[in-house]
Length: 259
Ligand SMILES: [Fe+2]
Ligand SMILES: [Fe+2]
Figure (cartoon, rainbow, N blue to C red):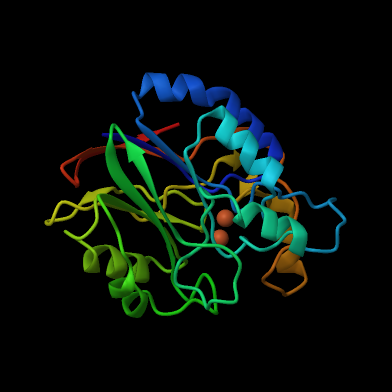
């Protein structure tokens, strides 16, 4: 089985660009399953709904599904649109938010899909450094029912924690794919138990700054003696953050970065 995993999509322009390329990418890489993290897809500093600038809506994810995405994952921005939009997007059976959240958070963190008549389970997991309310992953994990080949979107900030989770799940899952920082990591790993591990897949969004936001905003943040830039979209050009995995009998055989 070949899996195409697309890292955090930042903004609707990047989403449309990726969607246009997706049929070609699916064909070129013979992908049997496409997973995309869309938590920043609705990123628009001028959105003006008073509900924050990130998140995703049902029409957003429906565009991805129509283009060939099979499962949408997310993270700390899963609930950033207004309550009605948040409820609608998380009612979709193939939209995930991290599984290890307290029950009052809308959404679900696991979905099982059929790929070539065999079950594949996608799990969205977060560490508390990415989402303060996330429950400890180690505590949440044993309670999960995970049929077939298991692929994890690990939404985490700390590289140490990403390595702890990936090595902890080695042999129990086919792959652990890191999201959230938007800055792709160089090394990819096939761990001793056969788990493929990418610490950070990287964003699908605009360059011209960092993490999809402009360098000038980071500079202004420095000048203000602060840390958190105002939300703005970088000018581009757009890049694809994605990997293709070859998985056989629940073990990863190869990981290829694509751009
Ligand atoms: Fe993100
Ligand atoms: Fe995130």
